Amino acid sequence: MLVISFAVALAYHMVLSQAAWGRVLTNGWYAVAAWPWFLVLAIGGALAWPGRIAGVVIPALISATFIAAEAIGLFAQMVPTYTGTPLGLEALRRLASLQPWFFGTAMLVGSALAAFTILAAVGWTLLTAVRRARIVNA
Image 1 (cartoon, rainbow, N blue to C red):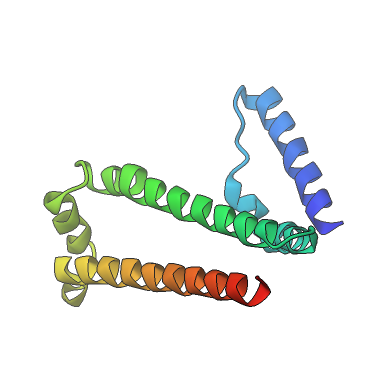
Image 2 (image 1 turned 135 degrees about the vertical axis):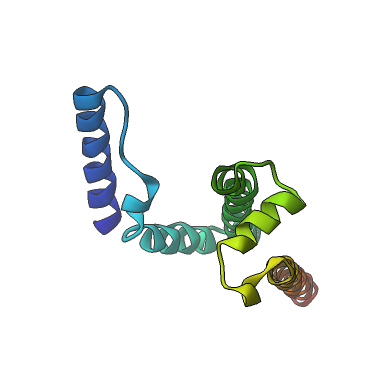
């Protein structure tokens, strides 16, 4: 009920803002309160389908979509907007200049490498778990 109520309220806001200002002014973060529960419903539904493939593929696709959206939003939109330059060392230098000295360019690069390493480890762990489940259920 929460997910449906939020979806209806956001659709209503979209229609009203389009009518009043000629463009939709409903931001995606308005749905933050309902989004985790939507994911619970979607993944729970996928896990309830017959066979194991939907329970693995649907959550993996949702996760891949989130990762791609974050990467595109960060590297293609946010960094060029905040720095006034395309993504590169100059953009990193400008981003680092907005922070205290210990959050410099080295920290930005290091944290990005750490994030990608953790993401790769999670992916490897999930693939290993799926392979083991196939062997056990075969």
